[in-house]
Length: 570
Image 1 (cartoon, rainbow, N blue to C red):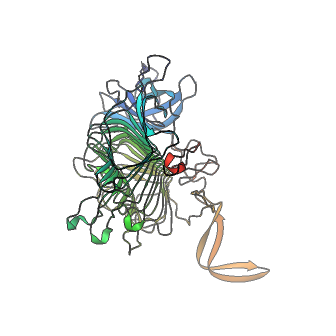
Image 2: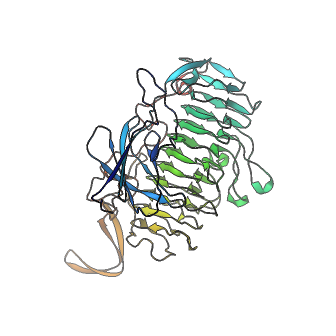
Image 3: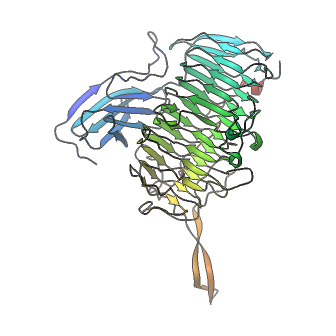
C-alpha cells in the first residue's frame, strides 16, 4: 500500500446524480451517468461504480474508501483498477444501502479526492396509473405513454383483479413498451408467438416486476440446421438502458433448446438485452423450465465481442434462481464495465456464468452457488463455472472472482473454460471440480489465482500457491444453504499403525476426521468480506455466523405476492 505524502492536494466535488426525493423540486429516480464530473459515480440500489480520469500513468495504486454521509468512520474497499488504455481508474463499492448518500474518498499518488454519491431508491414515484381490467385478453398491450423522472407511469391490474394476456399464438408479443419511465407490475403473460415483453430500441427506465411470463415463443433447434432462436420472455432492442427486472417468475417456454450433441444450443431465453447502454438490474427472479423445454441462455444478449453487449455497464445481476439451461445461465459479455454478479443459485446448466469477452471491466463475480452442470441429455459431464474468452480488440478488462461455491457431485467439470483467461483475480472460492483450473494458452495480461480450494488438475505452474486441496463438507440443510461443516474427513494413504483398546492394528488408507480446513482460511478482501465472524474469512459463498444468502422471488422481506398468485380467474 502506498504511503500518503505529507502534502495532500485535496479536491472536493459535491454533486447529486441520482436525485433525492424532496418536498418540492424533486427530479425523480432514474438511471444517470454524470460523465461530466471527474471523478464520478454511477449508482444502482446497492452499488456505486467509480470512475476517475487522470492525466498520468504514474500515480500507482488508487486507494478507495467510503462512509455514510454525516458519519466519521471511513471503510476501505478494494483499490480501483487502472485501465491504461484510457487513463482511467475504475471499480465498484458493493453492499451499500439503497437511497443513501455516501462520501467517497480516492487517494492516488499525492492527490486526495472526496465527492458525494447517492444510491438509487427502490421506491419509484408514480405520476399516473393505468389499471387493467380483469379477465383474459388476446390483444397486444402497447405502452406508448411515458412517465417522468418524478412521476412514473404504472401499468397494473385494478385492485383485486387478475389480468391475463393470452393471445393463443395470434400475436407476436404480449406487451410492447415504447415509452420511458414505465412500471409493469403483477401481470400474467402467456402464449405469445415470439416474446412476452418487447422493449423497443432506445427505451430507458423501465421496471418489470412481480409478473409471470410463460409458454411464449416458437420452435428452437440447432443453428446448424437453419433454426433461429425461439423468442424471449423479455427482449430489449438495441440501446435500451436502466431496465429493472425483479421478482418475476419466468417459466416453461413453448419451444425448446437443443443440447450440444447437435451443435451450439439455440432456443428461447428468459431475458435478452441487445447492446444496451447499461444501468440494468436483474434480481430475485425465478427462471426455470423442464429439460425438454430448456433455455439457450437464461439471462443474456449481445454483442458478445464488443464494447457494449449485455448488460454493458453499471449493472447488477443478483438473487436469482436459474435452471434448465443448455448453454450459459448468465451471459454477461461485452463491456462488463462495473458489472456485478452475486448471490445467484444456478443449477441444471452447462456454463454457469459466461463473460467472453470482458472488453472494458472491471467485472465482479462473487458469492454465487454453482450447482448441477451437464453437457447433453445423455452426457452428464459438466461444463465450466465461468466461460471466458477474448478477441482483439475486445480484450483487457479486469475480472474479480471472489467467494463462490461450486457443488459436487454432478457439478462443473472445470473452473474456467479452456480459452485464454487474462487479467483475472480469484480469492476465497470453493472450486470443487475434477477438471482444470484454466487452460494453458499464453496470456497477454497475467492472471492471479490463489487462496482458493481447488481439487482438480493443475496445468499451469504458479497458480494457487496458497490454495487448498480438501474434501468439501457442508452442514446439512433443507434450504438453499451451504455453510461449511465444522469437520471433514481425509485419507492417509498407505499403512498406518494405530492402537485400539490396547491392541496395535495396521490400517490401510485410514480415514481421519479433521477440522474443516476451509473455515477461517480466506484472505481479507476490503469491501467484500469485512463482516467475517471468525479469525479470518471462510472460503465459499456462506460465512459462518452471518445470515444466509436468500435466492428467488420471495427472498426479500416483506414477501410480495402478485395478483396472478392470489386472485381466482375473473
